[in-house]
Amino acid sequence: MSDMDEMEDGSGIVKKFMFLNRKAPHGTVYALEGLEVVLITAAFDQDVSMVFTDDGIYQLMKGIDTKGIEVKDFSRTYRALEGYDIEKLYVDQASLDARGLTEDDLIVDVTVLSVDEMANLMAEQDVVISF
Amino acid sequence: MLHIVNKSATERSTLESCLRMATKGSAVLLIEDAVYAATNGNAAAAKIQAAAADLKIYALGPDLAARGMAGRVLDGVNVVDYGGFVDLVAEHSNCQSWL
Image: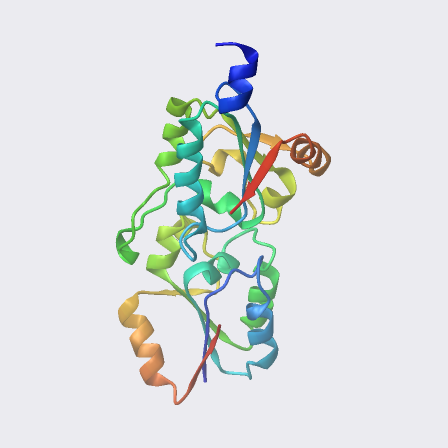
């Protein structure tokens, strides 16, 4: 396939996608819906970054037990992201600090960024999708 | 009076509104995303602890567990189950949900 063909049908183009997660896991449906969209995007071989800031950090808490509220526990799915080649997970230090949390409280390995680093990461994306 | 708050204090201002209006001796029940405010190190923790001098503060246990927060509850906050939620509603003559 020539370069021109690739341009016309859109295949082979890799864009930088950032999924920005800012909501706690169960009070709204945003966290679960966001996770579903990320998994779909992964199927299209895009350059995906997942960012957790503000209450979005709470999506990654260890020790979640949803039996009492009778909803699905989707927190384990974050550990499966690696299997979909989604390995760029970021949180920001200020959001951890405001909630008394550290990296050790989270179920997946993340890169902790400063506000400036997070801002630069956002600015360099082709597409930012917010949940 | 029983006040019920269900939104995260780090996202919405309903907890603050509630604490401003709650009179001495009233009860405040934190449910759903509001339970984060009653956990160690949260930005709202100091407000909860200050309020606990004049108010009875409760948090719903199943909502804490669902958020991985069962082991992080502030001293002075009473954890209740769904039966305790019903008891609180029955014990108080009136109730305000801060939506």
